[in-house]
Length: 396
Image 1: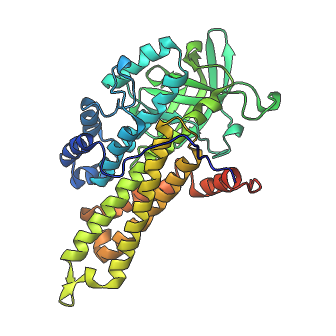
Image 2 (image 1 turned 135 degrees about the vertical axis):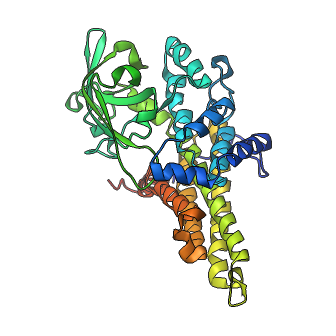
Image 3 (image 1 turned 30 degrees about the horizontal axis):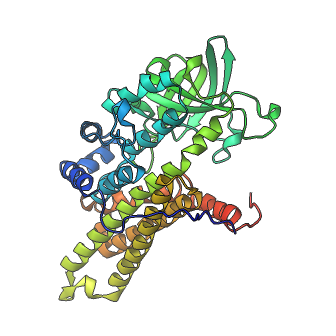
């Protein structure tokens, strides 16, 4: 067993933290009730007004340093922003990508790239929400991806395909992972992959084609095709061939961030289920009096509390600069499962009315389910824990 604990003391808040941020997010969300999200869901539309409001409040630039026009807040502060959006019944999918994708530029971009892009991202005049990694034939086996970027003078020529690239139609920039050295020519399969910051405003129609994918949830997801797309050589982030390490560098932050969305979902489900169970009367008494209704909600509450403690620990470890891969993955697993159990309890509590869109339960239930699959599946997390934490043989 190789736990990532350290003798370095780490403190984490147990009470509600960042109360001013939470209250501010709640006030914004109050202007975007369930009817707003239902309408978007029905039209498969992008939450332009909500994103604008969150940008103007400075929340989308929470993790961008002050020198580039951002708020320079800790990871935990960004986490509670996402948590509160979901706890209020909304969906943060259109905001979370910008929070973690810009981290690659911040940590590995050149001074010129950071100065060129980060202030505009912070101001909201540029959107960085598209993350081109997953491909239809390779899935989680990222080292086998097929998209190629070949250097030709002052440009790279890109060919290939990405899938499940959410919000590509609503983003100005894309963080793209492509192979620059053929797999058979590298010593390690993790080498030879490079990261590029692609200006999609210049690329669409000139070698980049974006097609929307109709999906179970309204994440505005797409597939992206590259056909001899020429991008400037200075689109490269960091060193050529080191891209996978740059992407992996931000995975712990990504997992901790999106796990807070599941936490918010779980809290919304529990609150909604409790309110309905107290109000709904059948056989002359509230249905919440029945153990068949009460116990699943109580169990989901216990799971949510446990997930929240792990999330707080993961964020504290991250902010202290300590190894946190174990806790980031545990957080993703526990929060996704807690949200799903809470969603199931809420669905059962509402009975047939759970399927009526006006209650928002079925929408939130669909949205919560995706966290058990993306951005990393629960099975991949269990494999990680088995191999890297418990010391068991690699399973794949």
